[in-house]
Length: 564
Image 1 (cartoon, rainbow, N blue to C red):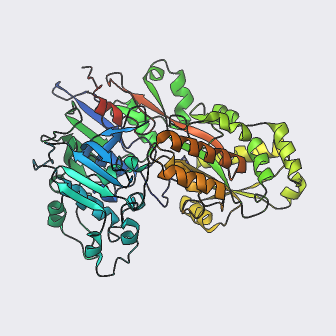
Image 2: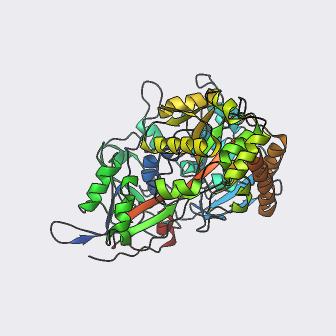
Image 3: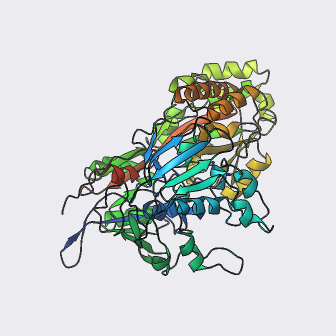
């Protein structure tokens, strides 16, 4: 996911925002009713109204807040994020060619209407994702399926799409066996199977909902009627939908999957788009957990009670500066290094972000298997080396100033703070003056994709905890490569790593690619964000992970309710 870490926008391969709201819904809490009875209910804010309840069309955190609890994908990450384990599938195997994946589904699994979950439901769901008429945001993740890219690229008005969907490498061997054939070996494909957007979908349920005048499926529309029409295979189901106010989930009475049955009796997900308003509701006891607004970081830390309720959750995300390497002065690698080494990331994290981030000078964030902080020495803050790099570039500060360099960023307090910090650092440490251009998020991304910028704030958030999701961003011709960077050595290392099945071989190749990237410096790494949550003392068993926040607690069965 490409963008500012302050607000992750869309990208070529879209995903849910890394706002941690997507999966905090599985933590048990309890609240008192007016009658004095206690119920195991969790009240949370998801930040925005879901766009759809159809997992195949979801992409935002507030979509996933419902989707990841009402539907289950084939696999899920292990708690240490180093591998995968079964979810809707008990197990999977890969043939000798590395192109055929066979998933054995969990026997006895049921939909929320009591019907059995079948392999044909996965075939249909994945066909829908690759159907160009659905315009699924996550389609590119599944395009490695045999004929997937070809079918997904078809003109949606062209006849023959239904026939083309039958040529995809998707097969229900029997009711309990789902088989996927890929175009080529892809050692990372197991992580694609963890994406909730690839959850099964019932063909009869979608057909019953019908289509609108434009031919778009009506199934999944966010309305009160969704309570009856949205049938999922997850541990929860919809029980109430009040548009622009809240969505309520209750346990799926037919759930018979691999996960522990919910101890919660109800989850109320409020649609509050203001962080300050949500924080106020936490203070008055109307929410059981909430993200701490940045402006309140210091006051929470100082408060004797609130500081004990604080849970810090590092995200698998990275904020950086994009350099347009096709334009002067950033077509000069020495200039790029000079700028990177002139920025004191630790100062920014400590004094501006108040400890809500980890300073970083490498691509892969802390918490992932290939995290290698020692590679970051080449971009580490060092004023003397920054000045030496600028001198070695053959360019002076005066010459750079004459170019009227502009730093483009997304409007908003956080974006402006970072821009002003970078501006001050370059002035103080290099004598280089840069202008600041604050624009709307969509405008900034149009400029980046058109190459109409010099340097800009950007970043990435993991779609899944595998290095492939990060390194492919900078391969030549990638739709996410907005700075014009191209290296045949980098491409070779990444492509070989992507195809390899052996994890140690993949790790070695990705490490080689990261070294090349850090040396070439098409970006200046800045920091890895940390989410701050306030959690009520009666919410027990939290073990958040950087990739799924609080989702792992439900799966590991560690939740306990402390009556109050």
